[in-house]
Amino acid sequence: MLKKDNRFEARLRPGERPVLIVVVDTEEEFSWERPFDRANVDTTSIADQPLMHERVFDRFGIVPMYMCDWPVATTASSVATLRGLMEEGRCEIGTHLHPWVSPPHVEQVSAFNSYAGNLPREVEYEKLRRLTNAIADFSGAPHVLSRQAAMDSANIPPNRSHRSVTASMPAWSHTRRSPMTAAPISGAMTNILSGSRPTDASCSKCR
Ligand SMILES: [Zn+2]
Image 1: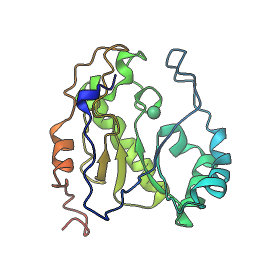
Image 2 (image 1 turned 60 degrees about the vertical axis):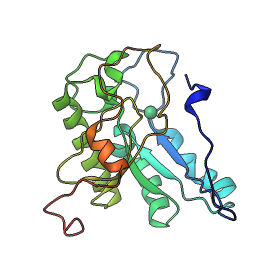
Image 3 (image 1 turned 120 degrees about the vertical axis):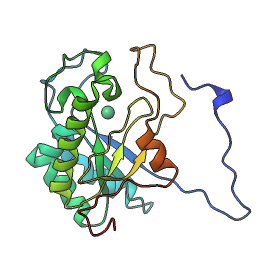
Image 4 (image 1 turned 180 degrees about the vertical axis):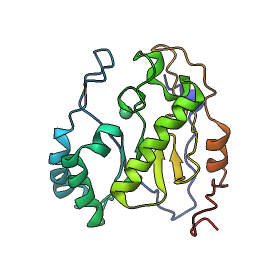
C-alpha cells in the first residue's frame, strides 16, 4: 500500500502550472475478483471510448495515452477504434503487458506469473517484444510508449525500442497479492528514467 512517508509534494516555481498526464491501461475485460484466465480476451468496451473523448477529453484538451495489451492490440475492432482516435491526434498509443494473455503462452497462469518481472527473463522479453511489434504495426510508430508498473522489470526490445516508460505505482507494494522475485526497477528502466534512452542502430531516428 502507499505509505504517507513515501510521498512528497511536487515543487513548482511561482507561476508554473502542473502538467496532467492521462495514462489509460487499455486491456481485455475481466474481473479482478476472479483468477487470471487466458480465455478473457473480449475488448468490446473499447468501442465506447470515443464517447469518453466527446464528453471529457476533448472538452479539457486532453490527449490520453492508451497503453494497450495483447487482446486490445490484436483485435480488429479495438484496433480500428484506437487507430481512428490516434489518426485524429486525439490519443497516443503504448504497450501494457498482461503476461497471462500475451504470447508465447509457455508459463502456467497464476497470480505469481501475472507479474511480468516474475517470469524467466527470456519469456518476459519475448512477450514484450511481440506485444511491442503488434502495437508498432497498428500505430505505425517505430518507438512506442510502455506502461510498466514498478514491480515489472523492463526488458527493452532491441529493434523497436520504447520511447519512454511510465511507472505509475512507484511506491506500491504488491506483496500481499503475490511475492515478487524481480528487482523493483530494472537497469533498463533506470536508464530511461535518468534520460539515457536505449537506442536502435538500425533506426535513423536513434542515430
Ligand atoms: Zn493492466
